Amino acid sequence: MTASEKKQLTAAACRVRMGVIEGTHGAKAGHPGGSLSAADIFTYLYFKEMNIDPRNPKWEERDRFVLSKGHTAPGLYAVLAERGFFPAGDLPTLRHIDSYLQGHPNMNTVPGVDMSTGSLGQGISCAAGMALAARHQGKNCRVYALLGDGEIQEGQVWEAFMLAHHYKLDNLCAVIDNNGLQIDGPVDKVMSPYPIPDKLRAFGWNVVEIDGHDFDQIEAAFARARETKGTPTAIVMKTTKGKGVSYMENQAGWHGKAPNDEEYEIAMTELRAQLAEVEGM
Image 1 (cartoon, rainbow, N blue to C red):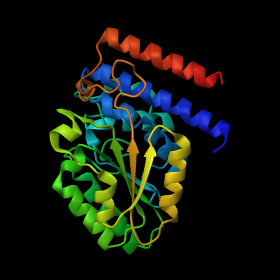
Image 2 (tube, one colour):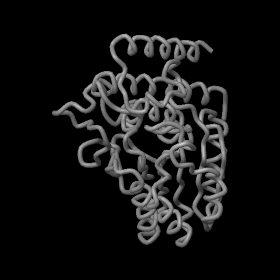
Image 3 (cartoon, rainbow, N blue to C red):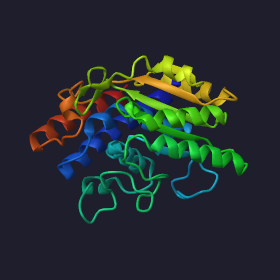
Image 4 (cartoon, helix red, strand yellow):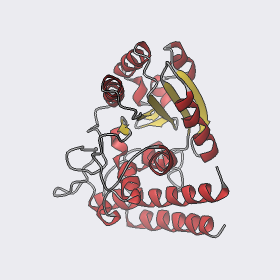
């Protein structure tokens, strides 16, 4: 990856984080913590990895993305707006009664959303079904799914993992956001999923472990996923919950709480400063 590409992606990820804050502040509700931890992967997927067209969201040959941890819709909406699927000015309408941007992704109302999600554990099953359908239809598209580390406590997730290996779905790539926190606290205290990579390998998956905030590592992981044939790939990325906003980082309390006016100003000031630093490099 060139220095220029990395700069562009870093700046875009910063704007995505600002969009998360705009959305959750406007809603006075929502899930900023896990949206911020996944902002870099959202950015890489929509600006570099996936074959998509914002001018034609329903293009049949497009790659598909399933947000299995559907509560982090503020992050998905922010990157879709940044990529041009709909106006960024709509982000503060999140969760409003008359808004098309509801608290969980709705494929019937939001341009760019490929699957309606929200019930944890179900999204990866949908993604596996999409990958299997694409194979039967002879399509070359790839399917990506983002899961939370708390989400993989769900049994249905492992059924989907087993199915994906059984059918050799090498067009499926699952990304696990291992920020270590869920709504009730540390994942290892609530119901430990560790060691995540070893369990995935035992289910027959190709596994790549990365720093989820390092674009070089993200790029290398997706390249390996595309090159791997005969088995699905899982990218286990270590991240920081609330990344980019000082008072939200590594705080389980920000899993599902919106910033008030004062907190909004602090967050946006920090993110604007980060963006200015990147753009000045």
